[in-house]
Image (cartoon, rainbow, N blue to C red; front, side, top):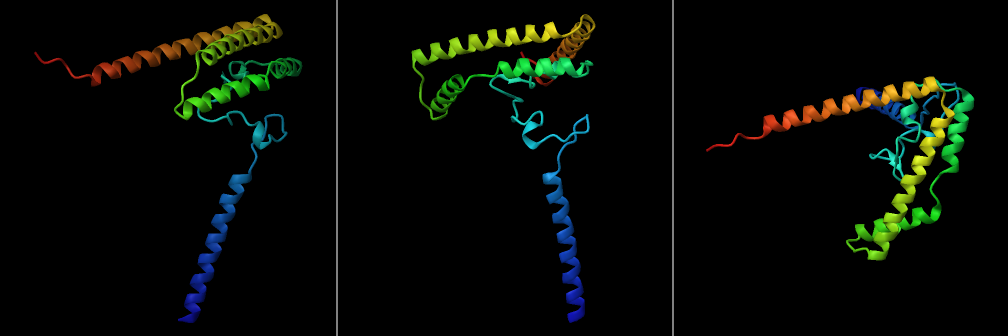
Length: 177
């Protein structure tokens, strides 16, 4: 009986250690990059949470360029454009303070609302300038590919919108007179 208990305990311990090892290795694994180098944990795309972006810039800046063959020089130029146009710390601090005020249930002043509106307009203008700079890096063929991707995305969005409307119409109860 004691031998059976020891065998059972040893087997259970071995299985538990094996399972722990698998889970631990899954937590620390790194995603390999396409060029053979490893991507560090903070450098992975999509690490900003559910909304997929930080500071209102969704998609990490090069999302629409996926699938378009860029040269290494173009990639470096685009990366430099994005680095040069990162949000400033003071703008981020203002956004955070207003967000915290709203989360706490407080109200923001008219002055803060005006500042927020001004910052958003400046951010839109900056994003538009970045977009134009990135387009200037692309060749005419790459711009054509980008436009085709945009048209395809618009088509998919329209199909999804129509599907949502159909489902909404199907689930809406009929009027009974």
